Length: 432
Ligand code: HAM
Image (tube, rainbow, N blue to C red; front, side, top):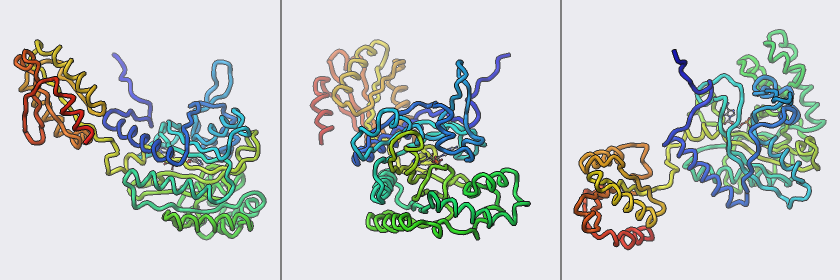
C-alpha cells in the first residue's frame, strides 16, 4: 500500500489565488520600500549555526529549542535561518560594509524556519518581509523605518494599527536592569517551571518571553526598562517619540516589550492585532547597534523590523492584487482552435496587462460561456472581475471572415468586428 505524502507539519503550500496575494503584498513592499531608497537583498536560506547562536543569542527560545540544525555531509553544522537580520549583517560584513556608502538601506522577503508548536498563525516554515537600515545612529533612523512601515501597512489597507514602543537598556544599564529583575523574581523562584528557572539564571530579560501566566503577572510589578536607561538612551527615546508624533505614526508605550532576540539595543517595537488571536504579533523590530561589530564588522548602528507575511496576508480585507481584465477565448470547435490561439496571442500583445485564457478543449461556445460565468462568480478571480471579464467567441464564421465576437459578461453586450481592429479598440481602451 502506498503511503500518502503530505507537507511536513507546520508548513503550508500556497496555491493560487493565495499565492497571488503574497506576490501582491511583496509587490507593494518593493514599491513602497523602493520609494524610500531601499534595495532588495537575498541571503541564503541556511547559514552556519554559529551565526545565529552568536547574534540571536544562546539563551533565546529561538536558539535554545527552535532551530532546524543539521550537519552537512562534511560535518559542518548548518541551520535553516530562523530570521533574516543575522544573515543580512553577515552578508554585509562579508562584502565589505566599511566600503559601502552610508546609510545602507535594504529589504527582503523570504521563508524562515522555527521548530515551534504549530497553531493558527504559527508555522514552522513562515515568511517574513523585513527591512534593515544600517549606519544611522540617531533617532531619525528609527523614525524613517517606522514611518515607512506604516506607509506600507496603509498601502495594504491597514489604517487602524498602532505600534507598541519601548526602549531597553544597553551595556552596563542592561546589567543593572537584569540584576534588579532577578531580585524581583527570585523570591518566587521556587514556583517557576524549569524553563523560566533557566531564564532567571542565564538571562532574566528572557523571562519576558515566558507564556506562564504566573510569570507574566509577576513581571507586571517588575522594575521598568525605562527606569534603567542611561541619559543618551533616554534622549534617543524622547526624540524618537517626538519624530513619530510629527510623522503621524500611531504608537503607545509598554515596558513589557523586550523582544525575544538578544541583539536589540534601545528602541524595540511590535505591532499586534487582536484579530490574530493568541499569536497576535504581526511584526517586530528594533535597534541593534552592537550586532555588526559583534559579527566581525566595523561598529555600525542599525535598526529594522520583520513582518510575519502569513499573518499579514491572513488579516487583509482589501485585495492588493492588481486589476487585470480577463479575456476568455472560446473556439466553437477544434476547427477554430488554431484561430483562437492566434487571436489570444494578438490580444496579449495589444493588452500586456490583461489575462488572456483560452478554452483548449474546444467544447463549443455554450460550454465555454458557462465556464466564463463560473469565472465571473469565483471570488478568487476578484481582481479580474474588477478589470472586466469578456468572452471572445470564435465560430466558423469568425474564422472565415477574419473577425472576432466579443461579449462583455458584466453587461451582456456583444459585438462582432474585424480581428485587425483589436489593437485599435483595446490598445486605446488601455490608455484611457
Ligand atoms: P521576530 O519578532 O522574531 O523578529 O519575528 C518577526 C515576525 O515574524 C513576528 O512578529 C511574526 O509576525 C512573524 N513570525 C515569527 N515566528 C513565526 C511563526 N512561527 N509563524 C508565523 N509567523 C512568525 C525577527 O525575526 C527580527 N529579525 C526582526 C528584526 C529585523 N529586527 C530588526 N530587524
